[in-house]
Amino acid sequence: MDENILKSLDSSEKENLQQGLKALIEQTYVIENEYKQLNENYTALRQMVSDIIEVLPMALWVLDTNKKITLQNNLANQQPKLLEKIDLEKTHYELEFDHKFYLIKVTSHADKLIVSATDISDEKRNERLASMGTVAAHLAHEIRNPIGSISLLSSALFERSELKNKHIVLEIQKAISRVERIVNSTLLFTKGVHVNLNEFNLKELQDECEQAIGAYNYLANIDFTFEFLDLKINADKSLLALVLQNLLYNAIDAIEESENDDGCIKVKCEQKEDKIFIKVYDNGVSIKDKKMVFEAFKTTKLKGNGLGLSLSKQIIDAHNGILGFDENPKCFFIELKI
Image (cartoon, rainbow, N blue to C red; front, top):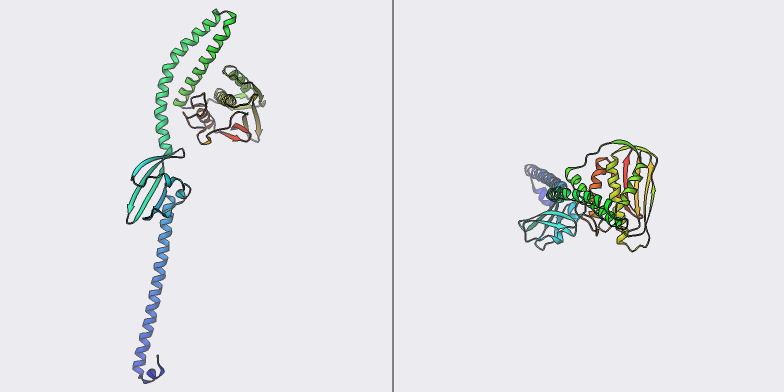
């Protein structure tokens, strides 16, 4: 303010001017504090919205009018290619992508598109397994009776056959045994696995493995090696034998699908502290679809019904163990606590 104007004011006018300036300054502070509070509230609100979006059990994208992402949560960020497969013209549908099923919802708000994808793979899998399990159990029961009759007749035929023809009957019996294994595995899978724990020596599983190999049809030249520990454990011997049988048959099939002139399968047992590991190595074809290895009714093998590994995993899970695989060197392993 000009100094001459201040000199021309009397004391009362100066006091009024001071009071006015003071009130203006105080009002400025009030507005500044209100702005700071509003900004803090806005920041807190953005953080709260961000936290809510992150805890949602679905992938979420917000798109602008040009279909560009303006906001996405971590689940969406982990699936960058999923959004490309979503049809934004549909508001509600199911999508299969990368061996998983998603429930897709697309909603419009103002000038934004809100897209969500909820993983419903477990629900779809359970529905499919329930449906397929019902059909499989029915078929298994229907097949069991005629197979039993054929098995009895083949035994009678073996006794009456000439020596030169007995090998033909043996091949028939092996084929019947294969069907019986499939039927029994199917029924066990549909009914559920219940373990019966008893003490036995691990070396007894070697006899089970050798018997399983003798009952299996294969043409490849395969060298088998067994290294079982002389150790007693509490487990379900018959179920563990079934798991090893499945692993051996998978290994045999993998070798037959490969171009190896000489196949090699090794079953090795190791103990590490309070755990034992049973590993089945083979030099057959590599695992083709790692995500679907233990999925029921799905197989890439030329032989098999897709139940062996899935049932084996159920059995090992029931023992509170782990069934897994390594790729280099290729092997399936069983891990059990003792």
